[in-house]
Image (tube, rainbow over all chains, first blue to last red; front, side, top):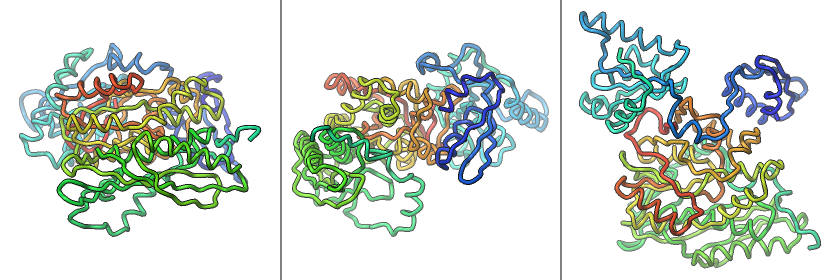
Length: 185
Length: 348
């Protein structure tokens, strides 16, 4: 099997896979994409050739309880956004700073496990907000974007949410209390 | 029969793994005019488990069918599993199955006729256990074989539980373990211990009768059964029908022993990939959920458990009650219902 074959390789070493079945091809490419490696596909006479390499950091969990029971790894951090603005002073500047901060999060070597948005902060996750696409990219990378439901209701934004899961104060409190550390921009 | 006939030798994808992809089905159904009637309490609109028609203030009819190719080697056992699976759709609406018809496709040129009889006997055995009368059926000459039931049941209109009733704040309960698709595929590829495969078969034969009874007693607000579209696929349909989102903690999902290991070895059936394609960006996985667990959430289940949405005050009692009655069920709280968010499912 491909998975076992990959494990025999050194990280970055290349391997060629042959298959004559289009469904298998699709499934193999889905698997490789999920492992974060490129898969180059060529075909000739109904035989498909996939050129790929061993993932740099293959998933090695054997028991889901090992890593899920505690929620996250010990060094994890949560970003907590209380307002649309970063810092005090000129609100226009504060907005630019916040958008830039949110945009930079995805570039961090270690990504936040959660971004919690409450009060005016929830507006960053609304459709058309300048930070919405940055938050979506972060969510796509596996970060939880959590929105305060009471705040969404308060500002009447139920139909404008662009990204994130509506949450409540019980879960938000739990998240902040169990975080390795919390960043308030 | 000198050598027992192995039904698994007739097929590539058995059980609920052989469903058409959900997305493809939705595309065709979109073009269909919806039946409409004031007495039609549940139609195809919400992708529920059965159609429900109100006869009067006391009784509504539940009407459903399910059939599929072999999921196991033994004909009697296949009959039991196919029947348990078909009856489950009635239980998933909070109802009681009354009568059923056998649906059979079978080629006497390819398979000994004794096998035909054994499949029917298995189905009949399960129907009797459920207190359901099999009153006839229909057979076609076809290969590979397929078997299942068309079932009629009843429910009090006030006690009807649909997949559209989940409310924010509810807790989510799953009443059987996940991984039947994984273990059957593992068995075919020599990657499953016999004991683990046996546990999967026993679970598939298990009727959802008790879970449904408890659901009615605890006033469960929404319910569906988990079959071919996998936990993620059916949870997604339930969340969409209820206009809410689900947050599911994957570490709490009860798994059949050995299922995770089969996926870790890379033996993942095509149905799981089809289901993954269907759920697509409607489901969010956090980074901590590893690949095998993500694929198990999409593993096609045959005769799977009930997924219930229940008031948080009753959730633990409900789980306790199911586990007390059936200590092997693995019933668990797996998550909660949140207000409708951009994605239907958030798995962490």
